[in-house]
Image (cartoon, rainbow, N blue to C red; front, side, top):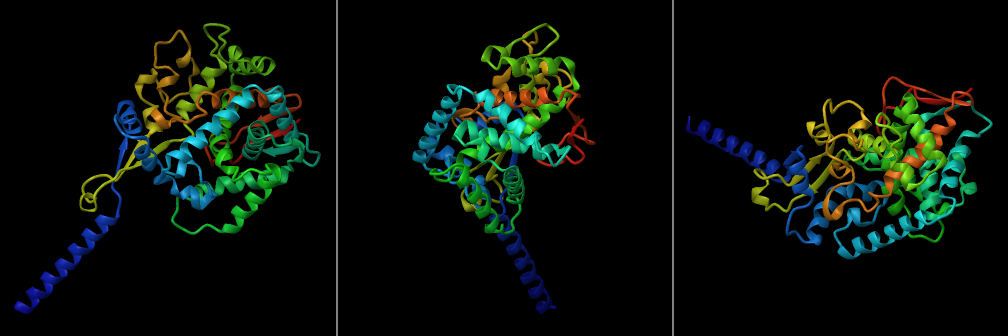
Length: 379
């Protein structure tokens, strides 16, 4: 009997040891869904920039494996952050001052529609290809004529796949990343790791464009707003309200960012002593998607309604959206990306005239995935 008790005690001790060991190496996660909690998480008072960068970079290390990113998003070095921010601002400023930026967007749309070998275009592939090409041409000066549609489609699909695969723990083949970089090097010669700038601009923007096109193609008022912006792509037209019943193009993009935030969750790693890990969260997550469905944004927050951003409404405005983050590490392109997405949307809407091209809808609106059944059809 004593021998049996000893065995039981040692067995129980072994089980407890395994449980504790697992608890010590398993991250506890806390999810924040309120606007106040998200602001506190993303912009904590009195925290130095080095600590903020470290908290952001740890959860993003998967992007190093997936896409070879080496920018501020995966680095806790303040110098890397300053260099990236300075260059990104310079690129964005240059786009704003560039003559022909709208023409570049139109040229990209035409390039991927005017292929002679097809009358049907996969919708997600088309929007990805157009957005990717506009980012290359606008930000990095790529010659649009040098872009081969099949190569662009390969790169955009590979980026999409590797982004999704990076969330798993498996090993990603390096050959695919090599093939991505080989193609990009021919389009953006002489620049070290262009993906550092391409990914933040392209990866989220194409999904905003895809969804904005869908809703605007369904609604005559929204469609008219984008057609006006297509003809006059100025900051004034971006914000223009033609009537109390018609939202601006800016309002449409804001509503897409609210209801379909391309960055649904923003993670921050916390420095937690090993002995506290079983009890204290070491990963804090801002659930942007859930926060954007708060009644703070007006009635029926789960429906698409750009009028909630109309000047006549009293609901929170664009500064209360968290699609671009918040605080010191808010996306440097937050003021540029909405108008860029609107311009691409306008150029696509102008082509969907139900005379030459029409949008064939699938069973549901996708995000990064889920666009099966969607296509652009030549009439």
